[in-house]
Structure formats: C-alpha cells, structure tokens
Image (tube, rainbow, N blue to C red; front, side, top):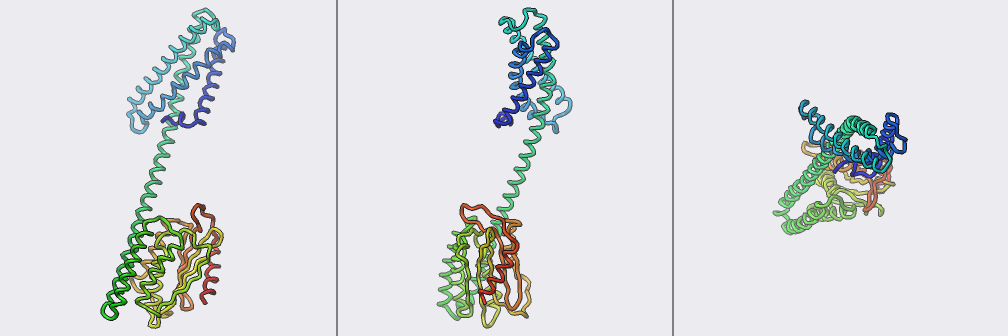
Amino acid sequence: MHPITANAWRLGAYQAMWLVIGAGLAGVVRLLLPVPYPDALQFALPLAIVYSMVCLSAWWVCQALPLATTPLTRLATSLAGAIGLSSLAWGLLAAMWAATLRHWGVLPQDRVVSFEAIAVVLASGVPLYLLSLALHYLLLTFEMARAAERRALESQVTAREAELRALRAQLNPHFLFNSLNSINALVGSHPESARRMCENLGDFLRKTLALGARDAVSLDDELALIDRYLDIERVRFGDRCTVTRDIAPDTRACRVPPLLLQPLVENAIKHGVAARIEGGHVHLAARRSGGTLTLMVENDVDEDTTSRPGEGVGLENVRRRLRALAGRDARLETGRDDGHFRVILTLPAVETGEAPAPGTAAAAANFTATARGTNA
C-alpha cells in the first residue's frame, strides 16, 4: 500500500501541498497571460489536484527502479520516460479542461491563450514529477530502514527466546541428575525412602512441565514448586535440612520467570546442607518495595570451604535468564559472611495487568538487612 494514502495525516498534508502548488501555478498563468486570477485559479487548481494523484505513481516507479541496484543508463531512461508520459498526460488533460472552460466562458475564446496556458502546464509537469520522484525515493529509503530495523528487532527477540528455551531446558536435566544420584544412594540402605523419593520426583517433574511451558508464573506458584522439591530433599536429609520463609503477602502475586528460584534452593541445599555433617538451614525471603521485587535465598556454609570446579551452574543459569528477560531491570547478587551464603534477586514487581514501575537500587540493600534480622 502507498505510504502516503495509508496515513490520513500524510494524505492531508500531501493534498494541502498540492493546493499551494495549484495556487502558484494559477499565479504563473495570470502573470504570463491576460487572464484574471480567479479564472486562472479555476483552470490551475483542478489540474493540480488531478496531477497530485498522477504523481503518486512515482512510488511504484521508485520501487521498480532502486537507486542502489539499477544500472544508471536504465535508471535515466526509465525515469525520463515516466516523467515524459506523466507530463504529456497532464498536458492532454489541461487541453480538455481549457476547452471546457472556453465553452463555459471562463477562458477567452482566443485559442492562442489556451495553447499558452497548456504550455505552462506542460512545462510545470516535468519538475513537479521529478520532485515527486525525489520525495518517493526518500520515503522508500525511510520504509526500507524501518523494515531493516524491524527485522533486526525480530531477530533479537527470536535469538533471546531461543536462549531462554535453552536455559530453561538446562534446568531439568541438571536437577534430574542430582535427584537420580540421591535415589541411587538411598536404594540400598533405605528402599522405602527411595520409593517415596521417586513418587515425589514424578510429582515435581509434572509440575515443572506445567509451569515451565509458561513465560511467567506467580511467585506463589514458584514457591509451591519449591515445596515439591523440598519434599524430595527431606526424604534424603530428614532433620538435617531445615527451611524457613519470610514471604511478604504483597509479593505472592508478582510474576517471575518459571524455575527461577528452584536452582538457587538446590544450590543452597547442595552447599549448605549436603556439604555439612550437621546439615544446615535454608532461608527464603521476599519483599516488595514500590516497583521492585527482591528475593533472597540464604544458606549456612562453612567458612573454611572453597569453591570447587563445576560449581555455580545454577547461579550462572539464573543470571543469564535474568539478563535475557529483563536486562538492566533485573540483577543477581551474591554475598558470603558470618557463615552464610546468600543470593539476592532484584527484578521488576509486576502483577497481572500491571506495567513495571522503576525500581530503586537501595531496595536490595535494605531488604538484605531486614531479611537477615528476621532469619536470626
């Protein structure tokens, strides 16, 4: 569709421009010929309106003859032909219109005057169509730039969605391998616990598939998924694993990416419970401050332990997902002190039907102190 006729504002501005051109053409006719200006206006204005429609054909001429790829000789001859045909058609129309106005008594009966008026129209048609060609080449360049920008954005969105799908797919195998190892460790010594763990694992995986297919879930749904995960781990660790929560009620409806907290809780149990003979404690907390949702997962850790190669897969996965989903609006921070390791997630607090509000950088710092005080 033509970019001018497709937009009412553009079409109105285009027609207004041609009304000005018609008034100017009438002024030229009045200066060169013994014709009153109102009569010259009756002659020139309708012709200008009709020629404005003819000049719209330059859009398809420009599309058929791109400046970057059309040979210069073909471009020159084709454009010259288009200019000549349009001007000739306008001249013939001017001749018929002049004859009509002579019949109505608007123009003098002198045919020489009519021929001179037609000559003015023919001479004006060439630069006007040339100007239309230049305008349409500019419009075509603008449309091509917008189309290229749109394709680039679509490619970025597609690439980001593919990355998110890959990261999400990485979560299930990572957790599944750990769970199977846990079941294998229980089969010989605690077969009943292994059976119960298999049942819990099946329930957890069904819930994971349901939530993982969605782009976002409520924090309440994510916490329910963590409960199922903890049911599995409690079979293995029993009283060695204790979990507490401090979840503000106004955070439960906030939307979060699915399977966002599960790998963090899994890391907390792996390094804060399984790695300690006496077991350990995991603390979950959530706070909302204006447009910022802050989540924390904290676990006990031995001060003299050091990181081993291969650790941090879950943390890196979550960090990359946040970067792909929300960019600078979301971040993951870690800290270790006083026998605790904590992960703090900061992301926009958005509920269904809400738009993200700007967050504050101080929200995460204030939240850490509050959550640690509650945990103590």
